[in-house]
Length: 234
Ligand code: ZN
Image 1 (tube, helix red, strand yellow):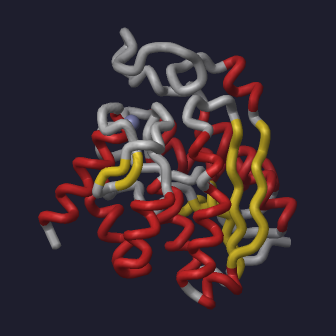
Image 2 (cartoon, helix red, strand yellow; image 1 turned 90 degrees about the vertical axis):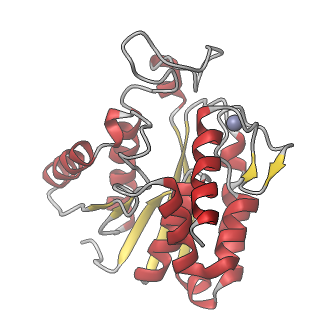
């Protein structure tokens, strides 16, 4: 039996999944997190996860009471079979087929499948994922249609409803910053800036108004551009 007022958040330690975690903490009585280690070059992202969870607990007594255990699933095999610039020393940029070099084929399908398994085992009734089909990331497994199909497959395969909530699916990065402010005010925006990691090159030495990163890779550019539009719209 799954409990409808609970959620399992796919939590990477990046801006999007941190915003989704706060979003879930505002809505559900019990929230747990799952992360995936798959040989990503920016494994520093994973190291940000526990400090972020601690910081979220400090922001709100309600969130402190709701946030349950975390689990990191070892998917090293994904990095072995799925060659990409995220898991191997390959140049960033665009592949001949037009997809980003950082595309890890099937990554979100595998993540959602394992998250579904963890949720089922924990008696949790829904998944929350920070995937987004806007901002031209170009990942076909982040599209709404893909996620809905996966949700249906999980439900059929485990004979239970397994809805996948995607609060960021149709918003851009500026709106993601705005959503963080709506959920947790400036304190949450500050937390996202200081604690989350997005940079593909795992740079946590250069601090910018929008957070740490190299400032040049696609992930940094998206984050910076979103921040600049967010600041302009304030
Ligand atoms: Zn970067």
